[in-house]
Amino acid sequence: AVCMDEVFLRELENIEIFIKSTRDRRLLERYQAIKLFFEGHSIVYIAKIIGRSPSTVASYVRIYSSEGIAGLARKPSPGRPAFLTKNQKEQLKQMISLQSPENSGFPGEQHWTCSLIVELIYRQFNVKYSTRGVLDLLHAMQFEHTHQTYTLVKLDAKNSSS
Image (cartoon, rainbow, N blue to C red; front, side, top):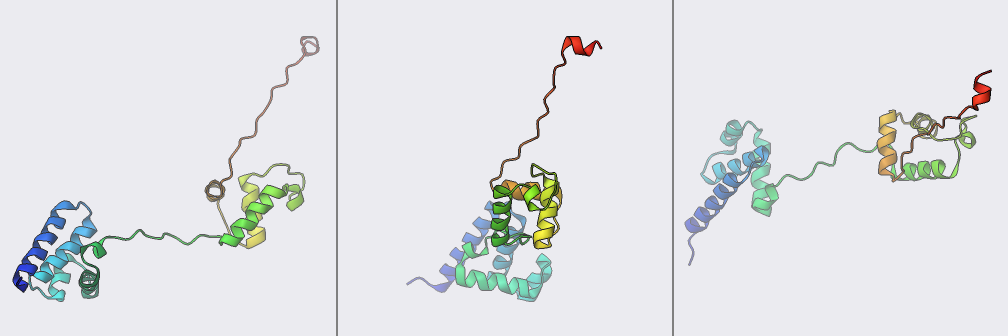
């Protein structure tokens, strides 16, 4: 029969291997907290050592107990919520694709620009975007950015001398 001390020692060795193998500072902190806990230190003491609150250390221990070492891995941060909902983005895509700026309340405008779309988003959804934010949004919505081109008109040699 395997005694609990052997299981404990194997687990401690595993944690030490993970500590040596990671370069992620936060993950290292979590592993060290678990190692200290295995060594018999109190949650309050561990919290002081690693500079976290006791509730944070307790959550590391709880996660480790239920999910093992893999549970301590950092999850990707979801980031800031989008300014426009999925539905609003779809509406915007339809407006830009199917209507000219002139038909959307911008008299005299033939082509969509980031500045016009900033204004369109504000009018339609009451959401403020920067022109750079609109550029990123359009890229994420699979729109291609094209630059307006200018054509030089060659003057007739006879007309230029007059």
